[in-house]
Length: 314
Image 1 (tube, helix red, strand yellow):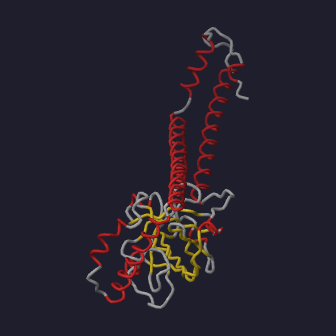
Image 2 (cartoon, rainbow, N blue to C red):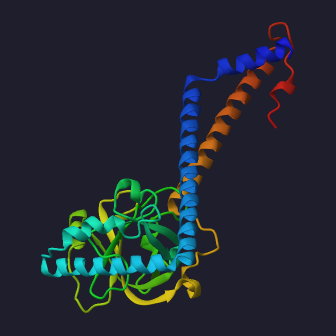
């Protein structure tokens, strides 16, 4: 490196205004944050896919165990139904204690939720802790397991606005009455048709889970997420009614969609990242052009003539 080139580069750093330096710093941090969020979303979706594949392999090879678990879940549902309908059941405490032992061989994974309309396929876990609903769908423990037990209600919750394309319940508001979703437990797919969609307050959502349905009605499953997007002041309820069950191997509707889709949060991340990179490039280009112009107007720089090749930004 000749001395002139060193001086020019050194001068470039000195001539960048403090405002531009701060702007580039903020933009760089923003871009890094957006990339981190997108990477996290991709990682979680990859992990979800691995867990679902592992679950399906077990369902294919250990049908006897799955049958036993389904029987235990059915018994649990009957206890929950009796408690909600009659507000008292001596077996409830024991059943709740046994809750986590049902479908416990897959890291707390109960089954798989598929919503074809919005290209969602997610693992369902016991409970609704923050850790749980950050990686999939959570099942409210004092509601029935999502099966076909007549007169029972199951409640599943999921986050809205998490990074990662169609991850979690971000696109749940795109479903319509008449759409279907499928819950796979073991080698059985339970089909539900959306009968109602409504928005309620968080306080109403707490009460809703314990409200009984008619004992002769088909089983229903309610999907709950925060709404509106980015504000989360209310809860969106998508209520589905059981219509049929089918063997997973023959059930084409539980196969995830093959085309790629972008969720709202991913589009926002991509737009912000692109704008950030564009602004960084603009600020750097503006500074380079400014320094180039100043140096070209000088007849001599520290004893060396300015050579345009050092400022060629094309």
